[in-house]
Each structure stands twice: as structure tokens, then as C-alpha cells.
Length: 513
Image 1 (cartoon, rainbow, N blue to C red):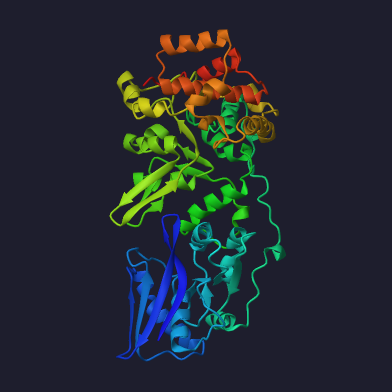
Image 2: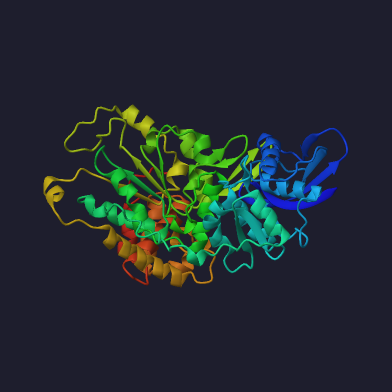
């Protein structure tokens, strides 16, 4: 006898609907799974057998063939268990459905006693199904422990999320004794709250650096901080998420989907998710940064999507790894090609880097003497190539704070900086209505003439910079965009000289291309 059920497979961040055909025929007892199933799927044969028997059903003593379609796509994960078990029970006649099961999707791993266990990729699978198959399905049956995180996806879609605890409960649901759909309204509303667990007021002084950091957050610009060890570069970087605007519902779903794809989510709802802050050190590999593996998984640049990617001791990192950032910083995505296929992961982040000025760290320090030779300094700084430095919008110097400022109780706080960011973001939101972008850093170069209009004096200044200082075309437009952000922070409708000079000031440590 033949039975059909449905589930989904994950390929990168995309879900593909999978039809499970279960056939029981005469012959010696044998359970065969076909359709490019990997080890984790084929191991389900024993889990399914024991789950069926321990749930009080009769397990067939015949030849069982399960076909997972489409057959050309690799199937991975333990979430196929529930769909295959239901298909097997329907094929044996243990479950007689009140109607066709094509409108249902089954997602869940089975324990040996028949409990429906949660799967870490449930959110990513569900998001993909809803995006592609909305209107074709009306029920998704999964472990009750996955429902909380996935419930945000099914709101206002007409799709019911069915919280299953056991295989026998799922069987009763299919027979007509329905499980009540998951109701998100009964859950306690836990707001993500203020992301500023640590405050910029903890960092004394550094007013210029804080303004540069606020500009980076306000306009979505990349940032590099250069200074001796112990001056507060890392402290300030860790506080950047606290001045960014809260994540929108769409951003939360996008970001949580990436973490779910990598199996890095728990049972928490994605609405509790804060903007990511990913800390990269000099020991990172290229694959860990960009993503990869035999089965392509996202890397740090994708985990930083909609948040901050912080690269500490940047010039200590091998140049080929730093160079791997070039394309993602421009394209806002990373394309990974492997033998088994290619995937695209989003990588729209604000880059923040920190570096010492030289290998010993004390070049230009008034209190300590630099021990590096000129050749060592050149070698150290060569890790940041011209093309890569041209992709950094703002560079600021972090100097040692004098004693009076260190003892000063007053210091620019996260709340003050957040108000600057909110002011600038509100102006950008109004300016870019109807556009596909929302911040100055993403503004196409072709639109700078419209949104960054210059007076005669300002135009003359930019002409001088381009000709006399030999800046690249990319740098020229970046200067205009940073100046536009500086103007937005001060609620100025026009880009003025002080905004242009401030933007140019923040490029003085970057080498020419």
C-alpha cells in the first residue's frame, strides 16, 4: 500500500518542499530510504521503528520503501522522522485520515518512546515554506518546543501551527481529534529591551571617537579605530549595538533564520533577539569568517547580518582573510560554491575594526617609545591593502586619555549618542521613502548629486580633494555620504563645509589606493 506525506528540506537558507512516498510491499522485512538521503536521515529507520512500537502501533513485517522527492536534492537532518513515521502508519492502515494530507507539513525528530523532539533548524525550514508555499498549505505540525520561536512566522498567514508532543497525539490529530493550534497570545510578551547593557559613559573622554562611532551607526558606515593598546577601542566597539535602532520584525526574522540554519538557536522566540555583535580575532580562519564547509554553512559575516562585525587587532590578521571582506562589504552577501551545490547567505553588517598603529603598538604615543623600524611599520600596515582601505568609510584615532578626563565624571553616554543616531536615521527614513535602501552608506553613487547637493564653496572643496589629494572615485563618493550623515546628525538639510571637512578628517589615516 502507498501513502504520501510532506515535509521540507533546507538548502542554504532556502526550503524546498519534500514529498514522502511510503510503499509497503511483500518481501523480507527491510526498510530502504531513497532520494539522496544522508546518514542522519537513513539512521531514522531504527528511531521510527521503536517509536511506532512504543507508541502502541503495529510495525509492518514487510518490505518498506520510502522515496524522498525531489530525488536530485540532498536531504539532511533528523526532522524527516515525523513525516516518514506518519506515512508508514498511513500505509499500514493504522491511521485513516479524515481528508488528504497534502495540506500538512510534518517537521520533527522522534525519540524511541515516540516523543516529538525539537529540531534546531525548524525556524529556517518554516520560514522557507511560508515564503514559497503560502496558500498551498494550512497546517505545520512540529514539536511543541519549536512552536514558540516559529509562531512569529505564521501570524496573519492563515497557517495553523500544531504543537505535537508525541507520535500517538499526531495520529489522533490526523484521525480528527484535533490538537489545538498554537496560540501566541497566551505567551508572556518579553520585549528585547534596551540593548545597551553597557554604556558609553564607562569610556572616559574620546569625544571625537564617539562622534565618529555615532556617525558610523547613524549612516551604516564602516569604521576603523587606530590607537595604542588599552585606550578603549574594544570597549567602545562592544557598545555600538546599544546606539543602533531596534531591529524590525523583518530584520529579526532574517537574522534568526541564519542562526537557525546553522543550528544555533534554542527555544527562545526570535522577537527577543538583539542586534548581533560578532567578535572576530586574529585566530579566525577564512572559512569561519565567510562560511563554508562540505555542507555550506554561514560564517561570522552572515551571523553579523543586521548587526556589527567587529574585527579586533585587525592588522594582526593575515591579509588574505581581511581581503575576503571586500566583496561582502560591497555586495552585502556572500556566495559559497561547493561540490554539492552553491548557496548565498546575506551579509549586510556594519564593519568595525580596531588596530594598533604599529606592531609594538606605540607609534605616536606621547608616553611610550615605538620600537618598530620603518620597514616593520610598512610591513604591518600593508595588511590593509589600498582596495580594502577604500572600503572603510571612517577612520578615527584613539589616543591615550589624560588624567583630568579620566577622572571626569561627565562623559558622553549611550543615551546621548543614540539620540544623535535616531535624529539622523529619521532624516534618512524621510529622505529615502520609496527607495530600496534606508541609510546613507547604501545610497547608490548615482543619487549623491540629488541627496548630497553642494554649494559652490563645497563643490570647490571636493574638487580640490579629488585632484590634489588623489582620492579614488569610490573614496570621493564615500566622503559625500559620510558628510551627508554628519549633516543629518545635526539636522542640517544641506551638506556644508564643516560636514565635508569632518568626513575628510576621518580618512587621514587611510592609505591611498
